[in-house]
Image (cartoon, rainbow, N blue to C red):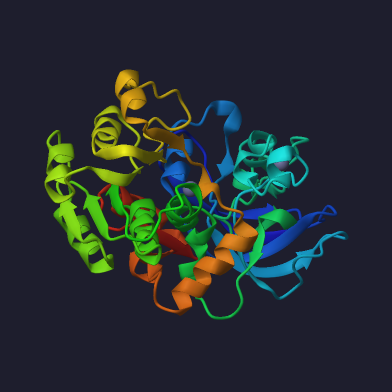
Length: 370
Ligand SMILES: [Zn+2]
Ligand SMILES: [Zn+2]
């Protein structure tokens, strides 16, 4: 048993209480105990907290952890005690999608990532009174100084990158960059529009630069975000709104080859599809309705006549064990300066971090421990 500081969700909403909890560190064969140094806050944490049902509480969220391996289970081979690691999502490693290198579509995704515990419903966290607290959120529940995760969540990151920079590799950064480099496979000299310049959109436009896209148009309602997009390498920026598809065609007359929808609601998706060139492809990433249904209208005649593609993308179609080291190499050579997106908050200021994120004042708040 190990004492740890953790941010606990006790009721549905966006309030986290910082508490001392107990971590059961008797590891199963495929588990790893990590001392978390940094953990990013993702919109999915806030959506999950806001919509939590009573039977999902109390819980520890967090799915963008980075830290040091403290102990490993008997069968763990990929990481050793003392390794610096980023934590990504959990996957089974045995299904057809895991076999194909597409673990974000693992058939066990829900029980491993969203069930509030191990697939057998056990948890590794208890509060000060000994009451069980749900854990293993995305297999990691990293809003905790110590956490038990699975071997497959752990990606060694070497010594070159700071924990606060590495934290969001496990979700936000790989989602944006992977959508461009893995899912859409953006070609050099192509044209790209990115709708929404948050963590995912900013990562997507940095990746579009890495892919040597010729024209990169960033669309966001906030002037500060548009300014940042230009600094990160967008060639053009536009305010969002109903005229945006026409404005994109003033820049690229035939429309863009690729659109990345980081928002996920009707107006943005309509603009994204309208902005596409013939045979263009749009990736949609945003979970504007959280885990609930998100029905939208699409003009199928238009989809068919122009031969366009709409593609859903989870976690950037990344194989984290390969893609995160690749992204870290881009950090090292200056092409993926995601440290510019990060604002650090000590864990006991998680309330301020959430407020700043919701106000749009920060892009990627990262909690730090100790
Ligand atoms: Zn996330
Ligand atoms: Zn699987």
